[in-house]
Length: 421
Image (cartoon, rainbow, N blue to C red; front, side, top):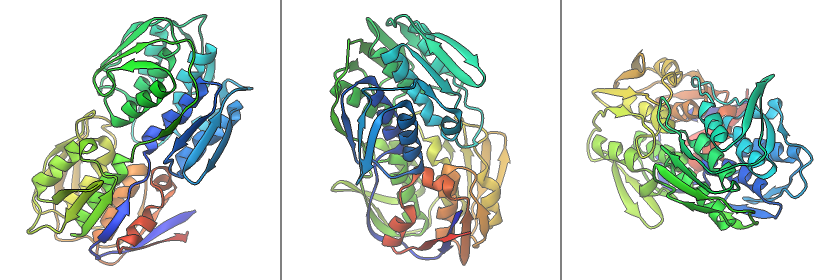
């Protein structure tokens, strides 16, 4: 098992590129199951989660080649329509093979999902949407077993207790593209990754309109064909790199950081006093002219402040003078990083779905342990700003969602490296 070692106190400088979006490529890979023709996906990051999805598709009988940022998928002769617990339990996004298997073959058996321990994340909206299309669904031995004589378009409302669901929108959309008639998904997720999936499906011959809005219309077609497609840059990685520069008072150009994908994050960084400028193909973070100011943040479905950036901005606010309040409305239990940041000298108190952050003058390096993917990133950011040596254990979480993060930070001048524990 690896750990990251960080000698903090260096202001980051230089330029670095953002990898392809993890949360876009995973459903795109699943969508390749909808056709018997070859698909080629470009700008694919070499991540633990991507490799897990590759294993799942191979276990179903698909042929895949993954090298140099490209994945070739051919699912002409699937020998198995059951996604195994041992793989699906490690990554929640793998549950999105359910929709395309049901859409193309009218039956599927998929294990209930796993992933990061950040609170209860049920699949009721997925099942609600697929039932509305005509699927019969049973839960048997920890698996979702579903079949349908035919799928028919329907009006489907996918709003949940904490807002819309990205993966439920993905699953229902992928099943509906091969259903008879018209499907309208109301309270659909609006994230750029959902738009990317819809655009990919349209290149395959689907008829989808309204992606990026709460109302998506899908006119079913008889079959889809193969295509080539390049996925969008990862907005969460881009935001993490922007915050790495801000927390070290650096001056960096982040290529592939798109303003239109990060509007809520940028709004809070601007409010805090971080200097961010448009640049050709990305964003530049400049050294602040004065101390940053605290901000209050509430996570919300897109285009609101993303829950996947909550931990990282908490690290920044922990060294920002004043008091910030961070409210988590998507996953109210997603605060496992609080205790580890406090070990480094932060002053953070949790009250229910709220974290009250009183900024301190500086953090001290310490051995800390990652609990989930984005908590890992927050601890790395804290280590970059801290005085002394920080060791972040359990970084297999980090490897699920960030491609060579330590190498990118090294390129910006950070003193960070990987060691065996």
